[in-house]
Image (cartoon, rainbow, N blue to C red; front, side):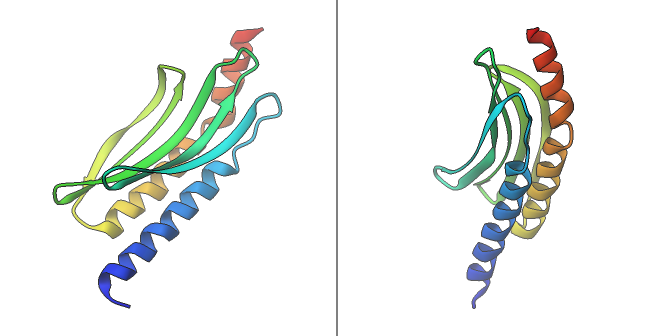
Length: 125
């Protein structure tokens, strides 16, 4: 396999791992669904969305995109238009460094999920 094919395979593997981390998020009082999609012209976003009993959607997500000669990685947790956690945008010059950040950010976004969902649910009652 050539280097471009290896990089593409590494991208798919990292996105699969990040998707797996975020797809495992569960809460007994909120419906959830995982999502992954491509972001034109050269990016991808993956995460999990929860619907609270009051109808608000809470999203846990990470993304990677290519712009110019860099890979840009972002991670966030949002409840509708309210940003609950926004990780700083990290830019790397190499695909493997960018993919490491994707996995790191997936874990960082997943870590506070239970606590944040509990806080949001407590605010409803």
